[in-house]
Length: 227
Ligand code: ATM
Image (tube, rainbow, N blue to C red; front, side):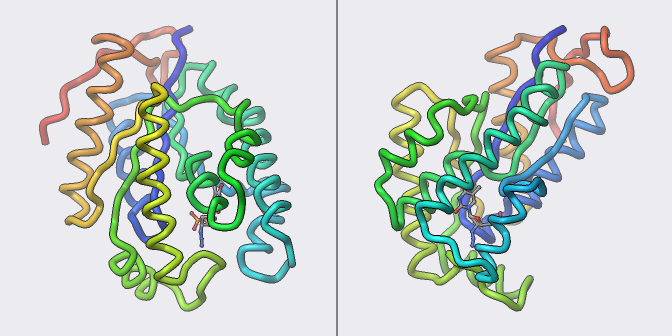
């Protein structure tokens, strides 16, 4: 069985992660590929604790929060991501370890956070949606009434810069990270996303890749995305 692919979306809140990842999932679905979309923090037991901390209903210090994000991630990998990839499925995750680096380094030493996540599977492709903090803040204000732990504009701008500098560092270390300008109409952003995904998949798998939804043995041909 061919291995599936692991694609990650990253960016500050309000950068369009959920919208872009679900558009990409729909596209894979429409092409008949087996695809699974997921997110971090997860809906699992550790993710639940994290959400309570983020909404300030549970008091957790930054160190415990960083450890919780890493534990949630290992659980996510072992119970969902890796089994699915091993079955030929494309897994798309909203957030992964780049979020830990960019957010947790606001309060903690980056090297320690990197160490905590050192056993995590490296994504085949990470798409970083880059949006200025002010834009993301406006988008969030339209969507929600409450402000979570990391959502003040100044913090968001610092997190945005953290994302960009860490992406540069990880790219130098051989990771496949693409930065996409998320401050544009969502169809334009999605068009770029699909082109990047196709390019990355072709580079690693050639023309034939991935199993189809219905026949596990059938290897589907990658169709061109032009619309
Ligand atoms: P979502 O809004 O994508 O559900 O993420 C919740 C928060 O968790 C988000 N910031 N806010 N506010 C980013 C933050 N986060 C981390 O700080 N570290 C992590 O490792 C992850 C996955 C998310």
